[in-house]
Structure formats: C-alpha cells, structure tokens
Length: 259
Image 1 (cartoon, rainbow, N blue to C red):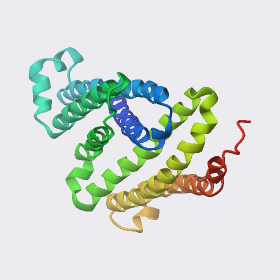
Image 2 (cartoon, one colour):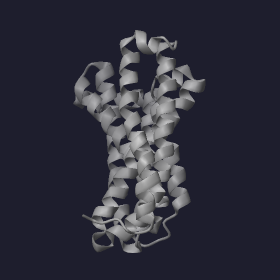
Image 3 (cartoon, helix red, strand yellow):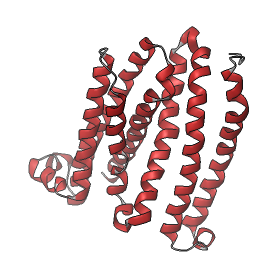
Image 4 (cartoon, helix red, strand yellow):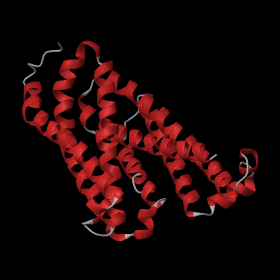
C-alpha cells in the first residue's frame, strides 16, 4: 500500500507539472501555432487535467488506507474518506482535483472553438502551484521555505511541462514544423533560461533550509546529493543559454535545417 501511495503522489506531481506547463505553453510560446494545431493541443491538456483530478482523488483513498492500516475497500468508505478530507492533506488533494476539473473544462471549451480564455487558464493553473508545498514540509517551515518551494514547483512546471507541449506541437505540425519552430522556440527559450535559473536558486535555498547551515551542503548526505543535482542541472542551463544565444537567432532567420 505504501508503494502504491508513493506512485500516486508522484503521478499527481508529474501531472501537475504537465498541466501547468501546458497552460503556459499554449498561452505564450504556442500562441504562434496555427489555429487547428492549437485546438488539437487542448485535447491532451484536458486529458491530463482529468487524470490529475482522478489521481488526486485516488491519493485521498490511499492516504486513508496508509494512515489507517487497512485495505482499499475500507479506505473507500465515506467515513474514511471524510476523515482524510478533514486533514490538511485531504483539503489540498480536493483542491487539486477541483482545479484539475476546472482546467479540463476550460481546455474543452477551447477545443470546441470557443475563446481560449488564456487568462483564466493561467490563473487556474497558477492556483495549482502552491498545492504541493501546502501538503508538504514547506508549509510547516513557512516563510522563505514556502515561497522558495512554490517557486521551485513553478520553475519545474514551466521548464518540463511547457517543453513537453512545445515538442508535441512541433511533432504534430508536419510540414509547418520549422516555421512554427522559428516562432515558438525563441519564446520558449527565453522563458526556459529564466525558469532553470530560478530552479537552481530555489533548490539551493530549499537545501539550505533543509540542512540548516551552509556547511551542511557538504557535511551531510542530503547536502551532497543536492550539490550533485545542482551540478547536473548547471550544464543544462549552460546549454539553454548557448541555445538562446546562437541557435535561436538562426531559427528567427529561418535558416535552420530539418536534417
């Protein structure tokens, strides 16, 4: 049960990154995409938002089973579910489910040719960002730790989730792939460099808050793992900066070759 609970928690977080990143991508980098392609991209956003809703609700049942030490049948009973919903974890999970449902509804409205409502989409997606922090240790520490954790989640969503949507759009664009790349990739590149930079800074602050002192970064196992993580991300930031400085101008001039 513990393993299944951990899988659902990871699934909720991964889907949150995809949903928020998709909302960002459709609202800015992919605003330049053809109308028919944009309509098609709202479908996976709606599907992932629905999956987020289901995963968040499923985590409530699994939390009850994990905390109570009983099976899924007992955990799915209303008394058990209500007990979880009265906790901070349950309230946050319910909020994630409701926000996922709202994003799915907005995406479906856009899929049917209505006004995409980009502002509403971004506002609802932004409301998802604090939920992992509110359900975790950052909420207990509060202050800088909470703000830094929210920034960390937002940066990861913009970098990974938006990237997934941009790549999906380029794959689906067919013969219009390179014209779309010339418009969308420069926009995403500018946002991604800032996002990865914020990811590193917020991750470092989170690490400091966790170990309690700067020397803990190299005196503890957690600190060493964090430094290793930062070391792995720094080359990606350098690659992004290089791409922004050299590859993006080539795309702007539309001289990149698909080969």
